[in-house]
Picture 1 (cartoon, one colour):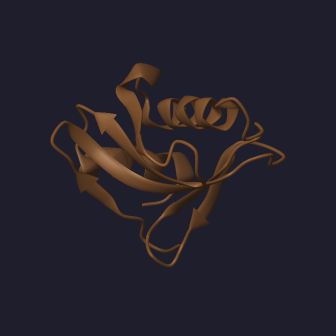
Picture 2 (cartoon, rainbow, N blue to C red):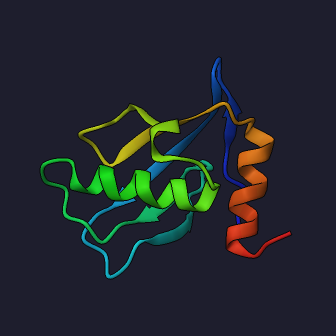
Length: 103
């Protein structure tokens, strides 16, 4: 699997995500060439439902409350920048890899 990019921001970790709405289930869909994480969500991209499903999924994966995850950019698009408050990039990467079952 390719490496995805996580960055330390002023208030926590930041990562880039490409969302694929209306998928069969909500799950990670791999890593793009530029290091962007692909996440498939089962919700449609209307009325913020896909964003809500994305935040809920990431909160579960990272073991944080949903209010600690913020969509910083791309709220209405498929490409998003997500901030995880009070979490380092290293810690977020470990939790994502643990969820994926990777070392």
